[in-house]
Structure formats: structure tokens, C-alpha cells
Length: 500
Ligand SMILES: [Zn+2]
Image 1: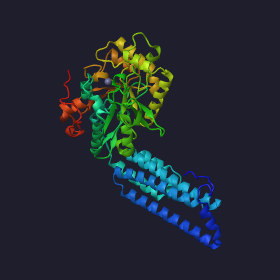
Image 2: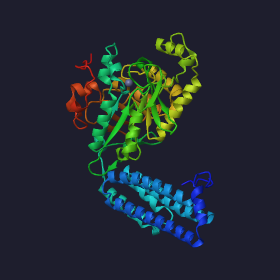
Image 3: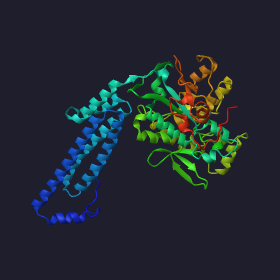
Image 4: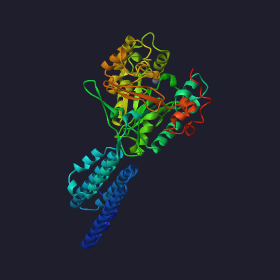
């Protein structure tokens, strides 16, 4: 708590101070005694209530409630104390503040530990409280630690080969614009998901016990290039899954089609979207996977395993995250794409460094929130079809234009859902090249429930598209996740066009 250093006159409590001066010394003593007694009672109630909640917190969801309650009570008490303090003498104020600060610090620590435990990191939660000052005398902390350890004892190691991986493209914010009958409608109807569908899927998966895990929890890449299987420990009823989003670049071709235009960091430091309205004004909100998942985890911390979020796969040719970060926007080669030329004509104030700084700021905020980045190849290449030289040129462009903005990555998510090879195991020139370029984690698209390979030198995982095509044609393949008929957006034109 930060004490406000304002005089009574300035904060409007001058009248009360005057009244106090008129009463006798004895009355004043009594007044302060009563205030202290009330504060003590309030604290006791607070501690009792917190203890009861912790004892009653048998499930993770209850722990989440405690986090919220502790924060709420802390804020409430802080407000009350602050009011009382204004009428006290300087000495009393200081003594009271110190006691209060200590109590607030303890409540904060407990809230932090509860959050760690809610996200299944029981060891960290225990270590945080056990390592705190005065732990030996703090029965409240000791009870909390016991609770964490009891939940940890119920956890089981999830079989890594049975971890599913789902992915989305950019979400449709305005269906009337995406499904407006133009030449892009069929494509959007097949491979995109609407915000409404996404929110329903997320809620259903959460209700069924799904928990987002990091690909790095599944396997560790060692310095010598070998891979070591990881471990995912979850209580009964929880099911791990990996989330990813492809092409989070807000391509020019999507302009005016009902999608967000970029990701930004707002004044609170939260990642949000910008959306350009019909009249050209810009709305800020949660219109795509990243901010929607961030908001969902704020409300449901137990949807994330130890803070993990998803993997965002980026190409580079139109820049990343809605920023026009590619060098071609500055060099303007003769064969520059028409949509880039048009965009540049409409943005005469374009500055490559400003764009790159903007993208970097968002990428850093995302990483701090648990997001990972992957290469989706610079030019959305079909790695199964292109030759080695082409792959090298393309990878070089990614390394120059994207890696510096995201801090590099060792994950590659292949475009077009293709894969390096149709063989059971990776081998050959392209694999050796990508491995030498630093890629250890490889993802393709595979409609089976799970496909995981943890080999000596790579990790490979199949991904499932949760889009219009899959929901319309293969709802049975999604039954472990949600009921497609309950999710499918009625705004979609039907039939969803078949793949040609
Ligand atoms: Zn793609």
C-alpha cells in the first residue's frame, strides 16, 4: 500500500479534524482505541475468512476464487485503513502502516502462491511460501503449503504421445464482411473461425478440463541438438493440449473483410487488437486469438499450465502482427506486390524502424504473457514441394526480417499444412538444413486426435484445424473437444465449399 501524503485540508477531512480537537483528551483516547479495535476486528475477520476459504478450497477453481477474494479484501482493507490513518498522529500512522504493509505483503505472497498452484506449479507455490520470512510462525502459510502438497500428490504424468494440438487462423470479427460473396468468401468459410465460435470452443474445452501446455513442456532441446522428453503433471480430470495460431500477420488481402488490423499494447500493458471501422475510426478490443486467450486466462488461470499460452506462427512477407516490418516496404523493388504498393501509397509516413519497434514491443509483451513464436516460413512456402535452395533463401529472409523482432525461434509450423516428408521419420537435406538453422520443433497438420514424435534430434507434432471446413464436414473428429453443431456460426453460408 502506498500512503498518500496529503494534508487533511487538501483531502477534505479537515472538518473531522476540527471536531476531534474540540473534544477532551480522554474522549480522543477512547476514539482512537475504538478505531484500533475496529481495525483489529476487521483484520481478524479477514484472516478467518481467508483461512476458511483455503480450507474449503479442495479444487483448483476454489483457489482461483481465493486469489480474487484476497485481492478484493486487501483493497477493501487498504481503503478503510487509509481513511483511519488520516486522523492519527504521525507516530501512530507510521506504526500502523508498517503492520499493514507487512500484512499486505503476506496477502500478496499468498495470492501469488495460490496463482502458481492454480496453474499446477505446486513446487514453486510451496517454495515461495516456505522461503518467506516468518514461515515457521505463519500457520496460514503452512496450511496453504499443505493444501498445495495434497493436490500435487493427486497429479499424474500425462502420456506425451497423447497430447492434442489445435490451431486457428485469424478470427473473423465481422461475419457480414468476411461472408460478403466476394472471391475470398469460400476460403474464409473453409479455414477461418469466427470470434463467437472461438469463444464457445474455448469455454467448452475449459469446461471439459482442457489445459494449455507449452510445446517446451513436452520436450526439451539440449545444447548438443538432442531432445529430451518432458513431463506434464496434472490432477485427475485435466487434459493437456497445445494451441497455435497461423499467419498472425494481418495480411493486406484481409483489409476490409471483417478482421482485426493489428495487435497493440494498451496503457495497462495488455495485448489487444485494433479494428478499423467503416468510417475509418479505430476501435481497440479483443478481436483475435491472443487477446481473447489472455482475457480468458485472467478469468480462468487454471486454463494455463504454468503460464503457458499458445504458439503464434508468422510469415514475414507482409510483416508481422499487423506491422509492415519487411525490408521490401523500404527498398521497394520493381517487382513489389501490388497490395504493398497500394498500402505504401496510402501510408506516405511509413517508416520501417517505427514499424519494427511497434512489432517488437507487441512481441515482447506477448512473450511475457507466455506466448511463443514459430516460423511459418517467410513466404508461406510449401516445404514439401520447394527445393533446398529455395528453402535456404526463404529461411534467410525470415532470419533477417522476423527473428530479430521475436528474439528468434526453434519452432517451425509448416504452411499449407504440409510436412517435410511423407516418411515415418525425418531425414535428408531439408531436415538437416532446418536443423542446422536452429529448428528443433516441427509441426504439420494432421486430422487425427494426436500425432507426437519425440525423436533423438527433433520433436514433431500434428495439428488439428478448428475451422469451418472441419466443423461442417467432420464434426465427429472434434467430439473430444466440443460439439460442432453447438458451435458452428449460423452466419456461415452453407454448404461450406468443398476443398478443390
Ligand atoms: Zn498459413
